[in-house]
Length: 403
Image (cartoon, rainbow, N blue to C red; front, top):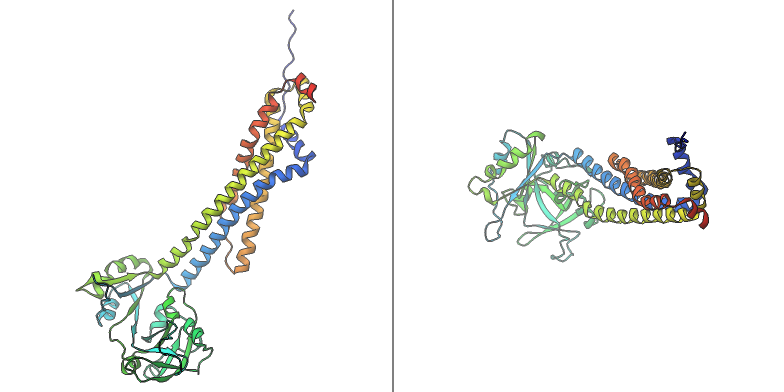
């Protein structure tokens, strides 16, 4: 009667997991250092994408408060590069477009502004003196920091409202101060500061301007009777429609000589300029993951050499090659998983700390918070594949003899 061969030993998944944890438990420092490279790579990915997302959320929040439905219409250039003025009726015509909820404008003058009459005429600090309609502040959703805005009583008086940057360059901190306004062919005159505006991120040209009432600009500062920039506040769902017809409406005779833009698009473009830096840091994160994978592979190879006696004994007791390979592969996967989880936690903590410091809403992309540990597991699997196969290829006698 033929003797029956013993059935190969079987290991439950829980037993394989305990065997896989044997290496990290007994070699804690080496395992921690191996997982550190993975952790730094995942942390860099999560932190960079999270900080970029938080910055974009901050800018979009600013857009929502300022309103992304603002359109500006300004003179374009002809074929010789010369500005083609808008018709003086353009403001009224643009205001007649059905989806336009509010329209206002500024106009150029021939004047420059100085801190006092002794400042040389060529030192203008790149500031412009513009005429402003009374509803300009409402159209661009600007805010007065201190003082007050122009009204029907003050638009004919020698008073100005300063943008935030112009006030800083002129050294003006409060209403009541006077600035000197003069220009070629103009009689210099002191103008009282009526108010100072808050910075306006959506319309930054207002920050660098000195604003006077329209009647004052025309009577005293040789102001243009045609608008230099028209601001349209449009129904949010009809912005594209108004952009399509704004040029032809503003100047029907020469629609190609009209510049139409949407300032909020500039802010969105600025939010996307971080992509280059993000790509660079993600590349560095990839290098960190590669280094981490090499570290895990190195640790596993050394571990296999150190544990040849253990491998030989288990093989002699009936452990199959697949079980030996699974033990070491699980150990590598666990190192990657631990590193990935630690990196995701570190990256999220970095995002929250940085966003809080900047006053931004913290935004950690869920896809990276979940994909980070998954990528780390993949790196650990690839890194541990060769050491696992090497351990599985050992013969019982050879492993015991070299132990």
